[in-house]
Image: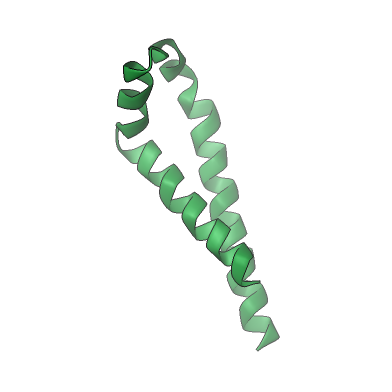
Length: 66
């Protein structure tokens, strides 16, 4: 259960960082893939929701187990 919580938290932080800041846009521009920046919202927002739900599920399981 600890691994599930770790994956959820790390995924949430990384995805939120890419959503709220322009880190990913700058990185894609540096590697020459700036044409993909228009499609980032279709990937990042569902990923943020999925990682947030995964974190909440892991916390719920940990609290019910104790």
